[in-house]
Image (cartoon, rainbow over the protein chains, first blue to last red):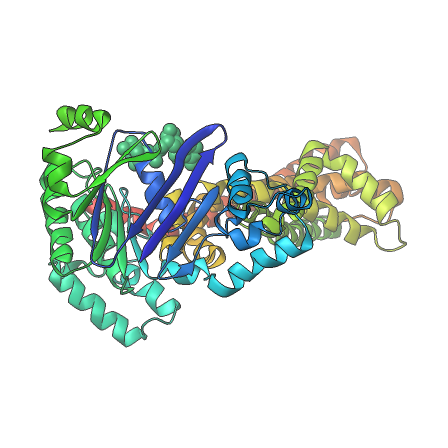
Amino acid sequence: MINAKNIYKNFGKNEVIKNASIDIEKGERVVIIGPSGGGKSTFLRCLNLLEEVTRGEVWLDGKLISKPDPYLHDEVLKYSDAYLRKTKRGEKDEDKILSEIKENRELKKREGIRFNKELKKISANYGQDINVARRKMGMVFQQFNLFNNMTVMQNLVYVPVKLKILSKAEAEKKATELLGRINLSDKKDAYPASLSGGQKQRVAIIRSLMMNPEVMLFDEPTSALDPEMVGEVLSLIKELADEGMTMVIVTHEMGFAREVATRVLFIDGGAIAEDDSPEEIFTNPKNARLKEFLSKVL
Amino acid sequence: MGYYFQGFLHTIIVTFIAVGIGLVLGFTVAIIKISAGNYKFMKIPAIICNIYTTVFRGTPVALQLFIMVFAVFAIPGFKPAAAIITFGINSGAYVSENIRAGITSVDKGQMEAGRAMGLNWLQTMIRIILPQAVKNIIPAIGNEMIALLKETSIISMVGSTVGTLTFDLNFASRTAYKTVTNYLATGIIAAVFYLSVVYLMVFIVKIIERKLGTDDKRKEYI
Ligand SMILES: Nc1ncnc2c1ncn2[C@@H]1O[C@H](COP(=O)(O)OP(=O)(O)OP(=O)(O)O)[C@@H](O)[C@H]1O
Ligand SMILES: [Mg+2]
């Protein structure tokens, strides 16, 4: 469903994600753990391109949603200046030439017309507008980010109606149902400022559900909450998990991670240092940094 | 008394039109500058806008008035319009910074939430960010209007030398009664006029602020 290929992200000199790849299938619940500053949030935000990737590609349901990365397409690299130069010189081994180009990152800032044409072909054949793709990926933020100028009801119905995913009547019906489900029907005309943190986050979660997403991304959904409100948010997420929602969750709640995950990623220093089942990660960790991390948090 | 009346009227008209120009220009410039962070093709327009705000905020308005009235728009009979345009453009530079500050003070999570749901930048800006920014912008715009109202009095500098622009209060107060004893009286009348208009503006801005403050009040109840 989501395929991140060799994604790399830097902020100036700070390399935050260093060539991470992952394939997430429908129904998986991937929990991301790791030390602070390791790049968990950035990695998650790269999946829906809230952070533009510097290199590499992100695919959703077989569609390319990031810019194409020429280094991932041999058929494009074959029109690069470096490739043409090497073959002219008499080098025969295609694979060797290509791997050299990739390894030494030999592409020029400006390649020829034919190269650009091939690259455009990739976008034309596989590309999907990011704004369309994002409708399929719900995102829940640490700071809730409900629209402060709208009531709870408006928060829920505004985007799906605006983007013509639901009619106004359908949206209101669905919003009413979802509000009932989280026991906040009486708050439908309240503004976010008047809600508690736990209420805000639960509204934020059902706001994502309004779009009928195929996958939901959570970035530390309970870290900004008072302890007594963590439970209500986690149990709502667990409910969604039980219903089969595909999820990627960054969290520091290890008990929750273990309970809900089908797969755990340990991200450290911008790389996926371990990627395994929750049992293996928590009972039989292999990576030394993971062992150290777990000994601190468990 | 005719001079005073003309002075009042012209000061208000000039301020009003210049504020209008300033708002439209300022809003456009602010949006162009901010959108450059998201749309690459707005980079060059944003640079032009930066030059504009730097020049017009970095030089005295009196100087701008001289250049515009006597050089750029040195068309016979066009002087009043040239003066109004100058004030509008000058005000636009300040207003754009006010609006930009108002927009950037909205939590960036609001834009992210809109974008993450599939709204594009402009849709999120218009429906989510701007309504929240208005609250921060209104007081600054009010101050800008008050400053502009008083600033228009320097039109007399270009007006009196040319003799075609007779429509500001200071000028009126200087020409109405040309006796020394009356200078104080005419000055006081002009001051009362300015004060009452400024007071009215402050009052209107307060009302608007109070209207826009409703979201915050709801917070206080809980
Ligand atoms: N917009 C940004 N500009 C510059 N640097 C950034 C930006 N966002 C993140 N970083 C840097 O990237 C690194 C990784 O940050 P990230 O937020 O992804 O870590 P994290 O694993 O989510 O940490 P935490 O557990 O504290 O949330 C940090 O060094 C951070 O300073
Ligand atoms: Mg984080």
